[in-house]
Length: 106
Image (cartoon, rainbow, N blue to C red; front, side, top):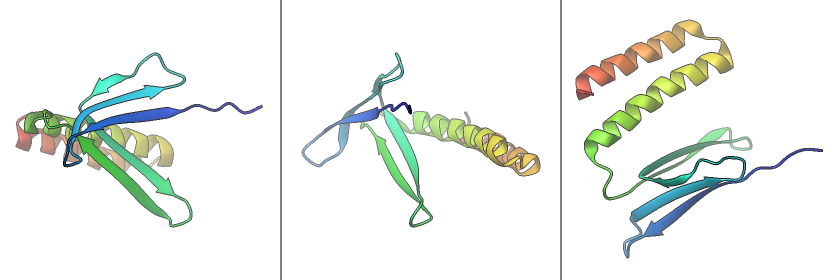
C-alpha cells in the first residue's frame, strides 16, 4: 500500500495580487507555518520542462533575498551531486555560491 502526503502553500494577497502573507503546511511534518518566500520548481514530465512558482511577501527585503538565493545555490549543488554523482560540476556550483556570497556581502 502506498502512502500519500500533501504540501500546501497558503497565500494572502492584496488587491493587486501581491502576497502579503505566505504560509505552508505538510501532512507528514510538524513543521510549517509562516514564511516570507517560496520558490517551487516542478519537472513537467510530458513537456520535459521546469515549471516555476516564485513568491515573496512585501516585507521580504533585498538582503534576505540575497541570502535565500545563496542558500538555494548551495542546496542545489548538493542535490545535483547526490542525484547525478557529478562531483566536479557540483564543486563548481559551490564555488559560484561562494563567489555570489562574496559579491553580495553575505
